[in-house]
Image (cartoon, rainbow, N blue to C red; front, side):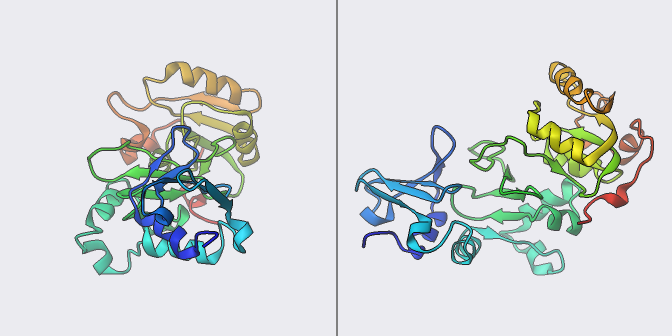
Length: 277
């Protein structure tokens, strides 16, 4: 056949693929040539190419887009498992128990799971990872649940420019800036938080934060990131009042106790703004 069918493309997600060296493509054994060649698949642009056969294409040319119901449904059925706390068999089934145990340990409630559209990859490149979808856009964070080979985080092979991960949608007077998604989930128990998904801040991220926070930022990064704290704080101080804070010795924002989070220099704690569209 001239192009791989929908069934062939969705079957890629049942393989244990890997990321290419540039981090932008997923690499699989090509199903068109019996695994003799490598098929590179760029999920963002929908492009595929088999170097063995020397042919490729773009998904829209075949009458459907990367986000079409056929591809989305195929990925969900083959690779991802969407949890539901209301189903007891989900929580206690042996294949899902590590997933739920991890989420419970990281302060995830049903509201949090829905907010980040969390799922569990049980096959493919992200097998064994919790997938957290950023509330706006296509970017996602993959967090490994069990110990073993592979990186702790395996995020979307997309540009992170301008991507932030807030726990709220309507503008607030103040918010806490943290590094990771699970840090934001932890802080979100007492007030609005924004994860910048790293220790640096680009211009588009600053603009996005300015659109969500009216006056005051509490900067809460890891203790060992003091240089980054100064750079991020300096960038935000151009248009917001920045208050520096730090987690207790030996902890990070994601492991702080509830009372420790409440003791941050808030002007007003308001957990009720979180997880509400």
